[in-house]
View 1 (cartoon, one colour):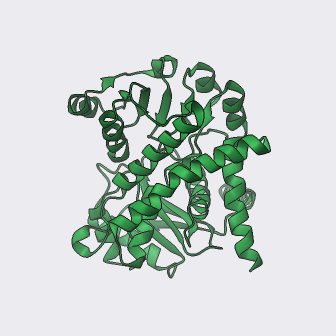
View 2 (tube, one colour):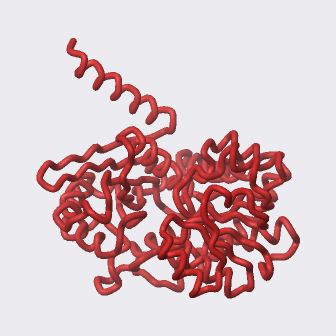
View 3 (tube, one colour):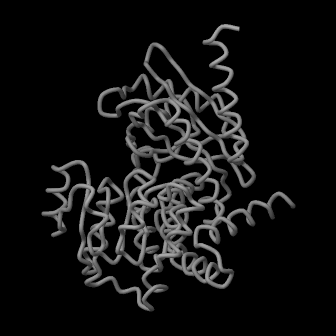
Amino acid sequence: MKTVKKTKILNDLVVLNEMELLGHEQILFCQDKETGLKAIIAIHDTTLGPALGGTRMWNYDNEQDAITDVLRLSRGMTFKAAISGLSLGGGKAVIIGDSRKDKTQKLMRKFGQFVDSLGGKYITAEDVGMTPKDMEYVRMETNHVTGIPKSLGGSGDPSPVTAFGVYLGIKASAKYKWGNDNLKDKIVLVQGIGHVGETLVKYLSEEGANVLINDLDLNKLQNISKKYNAKIVTGDCIYDLDMDIYAPCALGGTVNPNTIERLKCEIIAGAANNQLADEYRDSILCLEKGICYAPDFLINAGGLINVYSELHNYDLNNALNQTRKIYDTTLEIFRKAEISNLTTNAAALQLAKQIIREKNLK
């Protein structure tokens, strides 16, 4: 057997093993030479309904990183939908490339064709590196897309609703930790000020919190700082700062043994997916240090709730009312974790899995 062929077989087996370990149903690898498209669609679980999850365009260091990311993200979507009471399964897609340079209308339309080939088992939406305009191009090839522009009857950018849910999750965390959800004068570090992060900064500033902001984009930092009177902090030293709340709103994995040891906060609650580098290990480390961790797939569900409502005659007020439930669910999870001697992440996963299991028994 040729070495190249043998290596490919081994790589395929690794992916299948990862799928089995995380409980995935299907992965679709997409490639188109003409447009340069390289994408992966992962469907985790469709027990509760079709898999809905956004498409992320990111310049991954290698294809294995892209596979790992899409597998973790799609799994999180399953639990996000379940714990939010939505009739949806979990799915996610990633496009490998630089969204600022490599994205074209033709590429997005070709991706839409791959989405359409799944016959509605997967419904896409926007994520990092994507815009409602991109979803408009995808929609030219498939009806299985949400987050399309409002001018076409869609809900547009879901990030404001995501930020609203995260804000409520932060307030619920404060209520549980300090007995009062007032954030005035609390020091909050928002790491990552994209669409969601900026809106979260707005909510926090309006309540009188002392907001610190961190991002790789220095121009964006300057603009947000002036707009909301937030203090800019840069570099790796952000994890050593005195703060009450750490709100990770960029990419995942920033909550890990190194940062947990350095963090001086009492609450971790943000919008980023997969904040815990290792969900079992790092949730225990947070608990042992007395840090109240708000499970990301619970409090960042507002965006999913928003695009889900697009499937049922979209109404912003209905989406916001559903998102408001995040506050009570977050408190419920914290109390369940305390009573059951579980980490908050384990308690949230337990509830989500119970909902899926009960559906399977019907």
